[in-house]
Image (cartoon, rainbow, N blue to C red; front, side):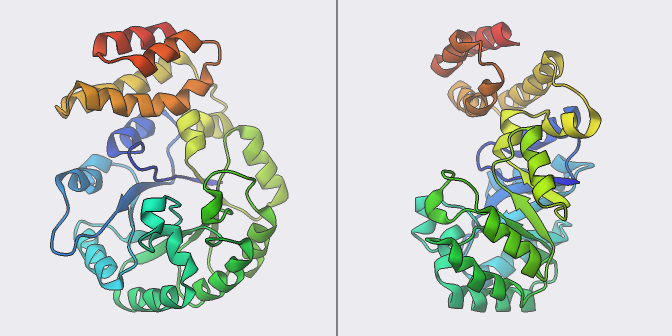
Length: 305
């Protein structure tokens, strides 16, 4: 099985990706949270840090682009190619209302004719490989039959399918029936993404779809960074390794001089997920949530780890 780290905006930053790669079973690909092309600007300082090759030594990283303008995609892809990237991912999966309202992410799926023209232009003009991360549609799963017929016209490097529609967000159960049909009918390689939180979830997926050889993990890895290590190496997550992982992230955020409040916000986001590993630590987890200063935060982390 091949494993990919999903792009979670604000969480799977280059600092998180690098710490994960250091302490846990390496991912086959790390997807960089989406870049939104700017009409007359280059990359922001923050974006440059995220895509800088020196921040990903020894890692296979794939930048993701969020746009519904083919020229913007092509221009950004060219800049990324100049940095040494040979694969770009197109975001057609983001369900955020602010993104969807602009017809981007999974909002673009509601305009199949425009999407077809967009793909025709980028595959004709972009030199690097282009993979696609998609949902099943905006409103109903049966939209995916039309979408798949569009994807099948192009040399998609990989079709990463999250089998929900935009309006599901992350609720309801993934639609395995439609995913199964996609596996049968896609002319391009398929990767599964969605609701894989425990080893048992992955094993059930393998049992139901033995032909699946690639999965993308997002929330499941943030919940338990040791998930792939457990499955592939038999390594149970221990607090010492988790502490080292945590401390590298914490120290690197502090080194950016982004301010105490911003560092704490970043760490609290991670604990919103990772806290589920510690159901018996309700009090220190609350202390993390309420911490306004580093010393209080560190005190709570020491109690847990």
